[in-house]
Picture 1: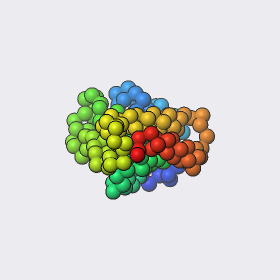
Picture 2: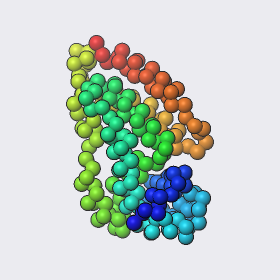
Picture 3: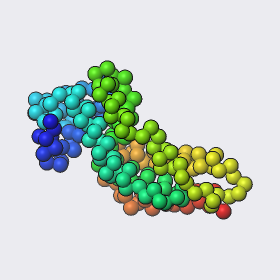
Length: 207
């Protein structure tokens, strides 16, 4: 159904994709405007529908397409054999930043799609939701090795504090990635800064 869209040159395809992700993520399915998506993509609305058929089909296609991207470029890239909490967080956060450099609204869109109450797409998405695990938290952080934590710590509380600290720092970077005013990111600089914070956290929580 979307062979015309998928056959587009990557630059135009990603322009349409990111414009749609932003509009749907910001406003939800019902209130999202295909006029805005076309305008932000730099193409006419009739031409956009030549590629994507209609709003509902495009939304459902985007959900499937985004899950495929996330599986290939995020979930499948995480080394689940790494049991150190800081190394696992380092992996997931840096991978997330790399994905968002290409698709700034992808995680927001998937969240909106999963939680939508829109009757137009809710039933269709229900079948798709069963393919996604309810909790990625348990999937990626449930088997962490806690033997390195300081003996006097409440490990569960310590882990939660670490998640909050790292999540807060990573969240600031991710929000900046969504800003149209931010120039191309220096990924090496981000990684170096991130490692510095992780090393300080290791000193605080590890023996």
